Length: 97
Image (cartoon, rainbow, N blue to C red):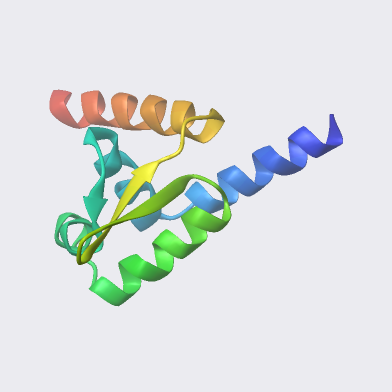
């Protein structure tokens, strides 16, 4: 149980950033390149790349090369479920406001 709690803490720490959560929500629609994620989050290419590195280290996203681009997508798992729940909840809350 201790290992699972450690893993949960690492996932939650990785998600505990507004930019990283925006990135994860943006990836709910499918894989995207860093440039598109930078535009969607209002962050620089460099900043988004650093956030993606943290998300990769926590096994929340993975990447693949497509010709000249590197595309990022979410990894299925507990983090995926948490992100969907948060994005759905806060998306509905924002729509109601």
